[in-house]
Image (tube, rainbow, N blue to C red):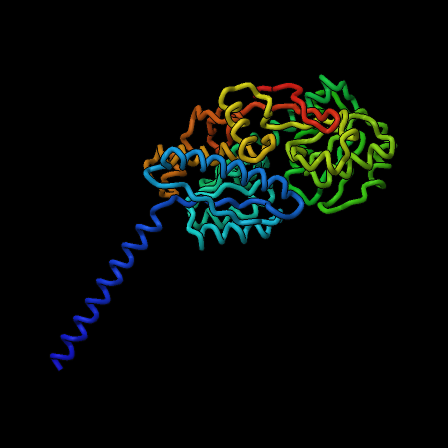
Length: 388
């Protein structure tokens, strides 16, 4: 009996040692890279945004890895497609934090998707930085308290709405504006509200407020109502898929007044949907212009064109900056622990990004300038830059 017990003890000890060595080998292999997730829209109505974001993140990590990586490890990108839907963004976030064990997540881009998935990454204590989630509720809760693990690389809608309201009044000389809102989008509803408040405060009048839903395709009845109010400008704070059809149908109906929107207009697909000439006299507010003359941006544009044979848009630029902010925070924290990275990110001040300098305020919002971009025969052209 004692002999059998001794044999069993030796076997157990051997198995334990084997498991320890196997575990050490696994940890070493897993430790060769630092995994960062991307919860982005590669399919669905805003797929153009996600593909640009993926390109920007990949370029950033490729450049970092070419210089030896971070903390002696290579940056590894793990992508999950949220299909441009809030529910799918939550599923994608769950996969990234629970299955892929990422230390940080870039995305989602759409405010509604970020807000929907917040509970998942917060519960797992994994930081998220949204390149383009501009709704204030991305980083603060209903009581105005900062969400500890939520950050953004973009300005917020109150500033964006105010910027375009001032541009409409001072540059376009608009006195009467009609607003067309995507009622299925937190981004669109929030931006419309901030634009309206600023425009009315500046002495303007909102002559019509109409709405549509994501994936609608026929806007003629709504545009007919708007046309009857004889506006000086139409404000459409939506995403490019619907915006393109709205602009196209508006021009076909003889609505030739200027049209404007937010950063959701920024897509190479917009001219394809709307038609190049239809986009004349249209403007949108953005966080980025590829025509910005900073040395860092010129190098970024050249590298992006070389890698992808196209000019970067705002989604590529802000995703690139998001990736570099995470890399910078890993270096600052001298750790790949998500909580330590989060703490370092919150203290970021004066970070030099391709879309401008980043200093996070107490609500994890960067203070940034805004650009007004104009479409001329389907091509984007820098109009003006507005500082905060």
